[in-house]
Structures are given as structure tokens and as C-alpha cells.
Amino acid sequence: MHETEIGVRFCETDLLGHVNNNNFFVYLEDARIRFFEDLELVKKDWNFILASIKCDFLKQVYFNQKLIIKSGVAKIGNSSFHLEQDIYEKESGEIVAKGSSVIVQFDFEQQQSAPLTEAMKKQLEVYQMAAN
Image (tube, rainbow, N blue to C red):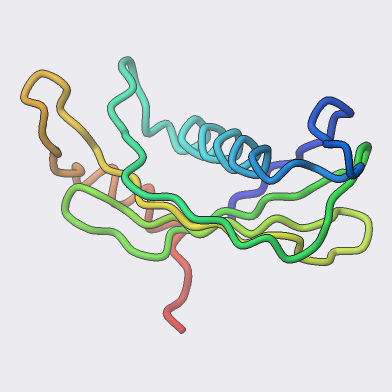
């Protein structure tokens, strides 16, 4: 699993004192971008789009908590892959949210999906999760 640490900022909380649910999608995006960078999937131009995203909120999160986002590849397709991302509270190790997304390689000139290269698939396989 690829891991990213996030610190919760005060501005990410709402009137109830916990992290607003919109910010979980920002945390997932931050971890996704770091995942792409670490795998060097993006060389020069950004050629991936987010086709679908979902997040299940399991526990409240508060200002100053440290979160760990673990990202793993659930499925690799021809032009897309499915990314599972679990968010944990660092100190307790408790899971606070579960995210999933579908990422598509996209040809912006042709305005259509583009096949993943064999090299990209090999890089993604390093983080592929075991089938349940």
C-alpha cells in the first residue's frame, strides 16, 4: 500500500468542530497525486481524469489530528484503474473513512480514453491489492 500523511488544519473544520465531509475528497486527491508522482505515472503532461469517486465516512475527524491514507490498486483495466483509499487516524490506527475511485488515462486531443502502457500497468501492479 502507498501511504500519505495528512495533518488536519483548523480551516477544514465546520461549525460542529469536525472536518467537513468535502475535505475528505481533498485528502483523497492529495494522496492520489502523491501516488501518481511516486509511481512516476505523470511524465510531462497530466493525462489522467477522475471518472468516479466515492467516500464512506466512518468516524468524525477533528482539527490537529494526523491522518494516514493508504492507497492500493483494486483493478487494472485497459485504459483505467480502480484505486481504493482508506483513511486512518494515525495515533489510534482506527479507520475513519473509505474512498474508492476510477481513474482513466485520457487523450485530450482526441477527447477519449487512451490505453495504459505496459510499463504503467507494471508500476500499478506493485500496489495491486489481493482479491477478496
